[in-house]
Image 1: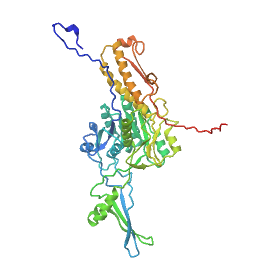
Image 2: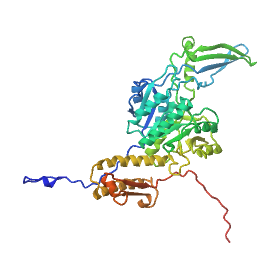
Image 3: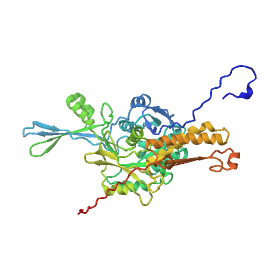
Length: 480
């Protein structure tokens, strides 16, 4: 605005006056940061590669390369059924199973495939090192480097570390706690945590997870279980010298004769190219198990885009999968959902007849906390806090007087009214949904003003999910 006291020369002066009140612009709510090892990396033992923002898998490949090729942990069997003369009547190609111990632990690329398949969008990649030769070497220090690099980025709102499940239990607990601590410190992000799926019993895995030394800032993270049976194809080394083939003949009497054993698949490319092609096609049917965090991050993005961050990311189908690794019944799910001892709720992913595989839980790890029990409540507060924080930067060093207080209150109230109209806040009227207080005698004392403190108080009644729907039926007595 033109300062009239500076006018000394006669003439006409133009003064543009803004009549629009300042506004709060909502920040992005679902920008995941994936931390892990990549094929190409400039990371060192002491520092992670600088975070890179991507929007699709092609951009990832251009910068970081492809998944680590598998060359071990897989054996193919060929079973020929013959007649009494030794002629082959039919041939079976059983679908092979990957040895989960021998397979590469570098699964970041595959987790990203799951992320984009489930509605994922822009995200950050933090490479903490190149693939180890054997695919088995993971270092807690490298993940810590990745979290340190992430702390310097403002935009990410979700922390995802799918490869960290390959660490020892103690190291994994330390990294999960570090992610929760960073979320609490910065107050603008949320950790998606995988529960290790080491057995066929959900309660065994849940107990092992709850016994990990993860105890602080639980409201800033959510845990998911079990692993997913995905439709993603492995990448294999070519030529496939490490994949072994065993061929067996079975005659009408049931006698088995071994034709050859542990022959490298690559040998068949020249000796029997047709069979080689058949077996290569069989490799595309090998089932890949993956921890759920990649898919969950995509579902967070999908739900935020279609409904809003205030909608619980649950009762949503998981795509690019054939099911779950461990089936969970009602009683077991109850034990996962409510932890009466430590309060560490675990969100189950369940398969339902005729409905598919759904995310069937929306609790934070702090499941016993009435304030921060639900994922959408915590994430909505993150969203509002960060949005208002950035909008109020314009008032830093402004006069701490009634004019500024009125502008701040109007700005925040207008923003929250929009959230209430969108369905994020409870109440039939705005005053039932939220309050905004600022001013001398309300939120500040004279001492606060003298010390340059402008204090704003905001209260919100965020909608909570209908987690338990109870329908009561009763007999209606006939009327005369």
